[in-house]
Image 1 (tube, rainbow, N blue to C red):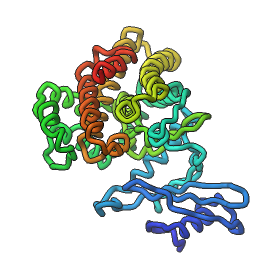
Image 2 (image 1 turned 135 degrees about the vertical axis):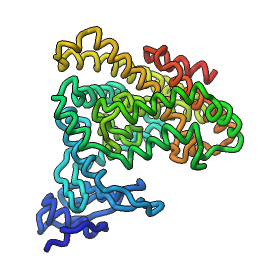
Image 3 (image 1 turned 120 degrees about the vertical axis):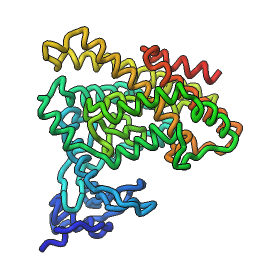
Image 4 (image 1 turned 120 degrees about the horizontal axis):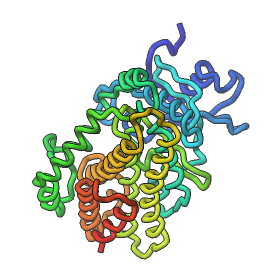
Length: 400
């Protein structure tokens, strides 16, 4: 019986052996090195490489327990990630890492090493700009979302996919952390600086109109099985360099509203804008670029989604009138979910570095309030804002 016939959590040395004996990416004779590079809470990530040739591999293994708390977690998530990366690889090959092997027993995913790309969140935090970002991410979104809907694929096949990509435990995390606790802190897990507690109570906890709109977005997230979405497409799941981007970590993937992915991208770009505005207000080059990136991501996605629709949606009932309604709803969802993403990262317990790295309270207090205000505005005005400039100009008014 093989050592790998039952699941166990590998260390770096065992990952080296696995890369040869199971993945067969390296030969038995090759001398390879390995290191564990994962910094998340629910997976272990190993980089294995041949120092002489530079050939390298990434192995991502799911454990049955959360790193932080030891809470049990369904290891099916790695299977979902492997399958969606393969699907996205056929639809947008340039923007995702190649998949070499998936082992259901060990819950280990072997894929292309994309070390030449860097984490977009940390790159933006350091002040770097990527003028291809809006074009690349909008292409990825249009090319991977619409083709997975039953406007395009066989409706029976789509229903099978909905079942296969049911991801109840990770969806449950989103349903709580994104759509419930920021407005109803029933688990007492929100983390709010003391100076903003009254602001959060007045603007979130006691804002009944807002809570109703969030309830609508929550309901759509839970019940609108529209497209196969990444499910966690924040700027830490996008890697970038001068050549382009790579999208990783779709372990939260399931069939949900496509606007959720678009909104996560847009929402996280606002963190970069707010951080630089309050900590480096004189950095006009970055501030001008990030405003443009947000505006263009929205506008280019709308344009490309429309073009994609014309190219691949052929069913007679889905005519131009239907298309107008459909795209309007997707774009409204996108802004609404951008708002919920912004708010939950400010008040919830899963924060972002752009917020937590700001230690000066004279900067942190107004930054958090500005982010909450734009989050609320995006939710409440999601049907009224119909251009990228509408959302960027609104944030500039909030900042002024």
